[in-house]
Length: 255
Ligand SMILES: [Zn+2]
Image (spheres, rainbow, N blue to C red):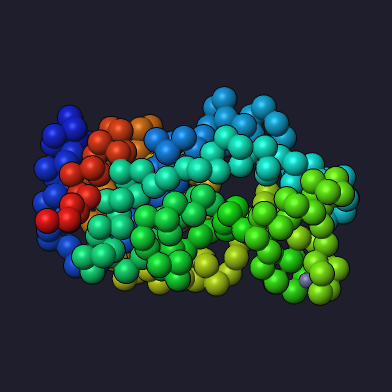
C-alpha cells in the first residue's frame, strides 16, 4: 500500500516492525540530506554541474589525483562536521535492540557508524570517504595526513610503503564494485524478514537488485522515499514522506 499520510505510514511501519525478527535497512542519499549532505546524483546535484573524476583518469594522471583531493577537501569544509540524522538514529535503535543485524548502504558518509552501528555491521557498497587507502597495498591513511601533505606540496601523496596511489576509500565511477561487500549485502538481504529501502531511488545497479531479492525470499518490503520507485508496486508499504519524520518515532530514547 502507498501510505496516504504520515500518520498511516508510521502506524503501518510500527506494525511491520513489531511482527518482524530480522530488519535489514538499505539506505541511499535521502537519509543523509537532513544532515546537510547533498544528493550528488540528484537533479541539480554536484555531479550534474561538475563531471566526476573517472577511476581510469585517477589512475592515469597526477593532475586528476590532485583535482580529486582538492575537491575532497573542499567538500570537507561544507559537511565534514555532519552528524547522524533521525533516520540513522532510528536504524541504530533497531540494531541496539537486536532487531537488525546491520545495514546496507550506498552512502559514503560514515553516518551509520557515527550513529552507533559497529563498522563491521555497515556494508558500504560505494565505500567510505572519511578515510583513504593505498590502491596497491591497502594501507589505510587518515585524511588529516593526506591534507597536510597536499597543502605542503600541492600534490596528492603516494603510499609511503609501496608508492601506490592513495585514494579515498570510495568506489569511484568506473571502478569495480567491491565483491566482499556485495556478498555480505546479499547475505544480509536474504536473512531479512523485513527489508526497508530508505532514501534510494533504487535505480542504479546494484541497488535495484536488493528489494527484489528480499521480496522473492519472502521478506516484507518497505520503501521510504520522496519520489516513486520502480518497486513501489511490489512493496508492502510505501511512504513518500520525509524520511526523518517517518523514522523519528522509532528512535529509542533512554528511560
Ligand atoms: Zn601502498
